[in-house]
Length: 222
Image (cartoon, rainbow, N blue to C red; front, side):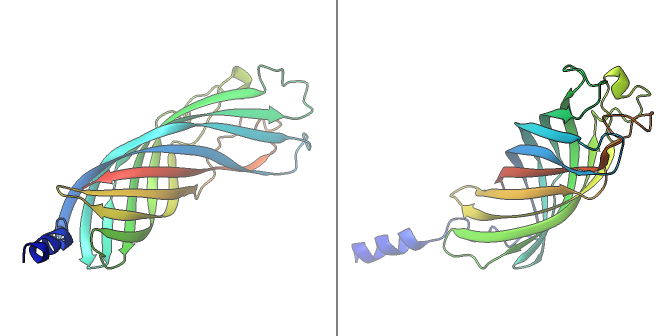
């Protein structure tokens, strides 16, 4: 009898009513690595190659979760993203000295995603999920309003950007909270680069599109 009771206790799910409320809240921490997708266009610098070397950054934010269905949740996850990149411009322009061929970009974003989360049924204390959504990103380090451009050493990007993201993860129900690691891909839907004032700029005239793509690893606590 004692053995049977112990077995029953071991099989009791953690937080059995966690998913019942219509709305719940949480927060997340994570790391990211963002670079840029570059497409070229005809210019006076046909041999241009732009190389991006990103470094890992961090992300932190809050979670507001609305249960639409037992397997569907709509989530608003406002947060801050910080990262940096080195951008190397390689072409045959005599204007690009060794110093001028490199731009160091440090960025901080207000990240405002609206995400649809599709989960499987819960199995004991785990529940896999996939997610997809769109976001508005406000780049505090964009330099968009700066009248100086690359000729003065200033690399400019758009302040307001729109992204889409897709990913997957797993909910793990612990004794006192739910822990949810996830991996996401983030992709810009607009051209983020601000062209230099000179239409024949060796930095921006060869670039047709210049848009973020990144990987996020998030750890959510709810």
